[in-house]
Length: 310
Image: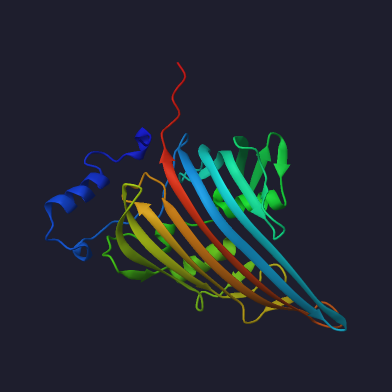
């Protein structure tokens, strides 16, 4: 059973969902309006089981005559299982610090899988602006370990990230199959707040589609698909670097429990980015083309609260 604060007042949203199915068979799912909660506030002491698998690839080509062309590639694959416990939250109910009990973190940079921790290893994750700092005891983890934990789903939200409900103007019930757009100005501001880019709100957009009601691990839920198309115009702090033909696209599929106190149960993210950069900082301009691809699937389940010590 989930902890007490995970439950709605009676009758719960889950009970209403089941009642609808049992006592109103003549009503089609497409005729029902559903309130979708994109924001999911948590509470101190919340515990969730996480499992994820993902890959990330980056390829860069740099040309700067008369120097020869340079190329570089990076690959990372992670497999992760852990229990997350919320230690601190923000006033908005977002996690600010987590305790991670890692049962498995396997990474592969192309040279073969490597287990990074012994099962049961405890790590703290703390939000520090747009970054998440991971510590094993007093030791701060960086490099591959930090990147792998970010990719695996341990990264904490930035305080600069807006409310998703506000971003998508998600304030009315929706029917299955319905699509609607994000506020373009809020979208551009949100990307700029957590990235080095200046974003054009005219050529950037995001849409969300309510797929319909589902049941995930016996929990009544609602499935959504969000798609993003972001056009970076330039770098905020580097006027000498111009971006041309650059584009970031992303698709996120989520399963949201009807009970708004429960966490998202599944999240699948597929992101691609291409940055074409021209830098004029010397006698010859340098051109850099970077392609980036990330695919990750997270499975999340709420766990009972820890038993209080007598």
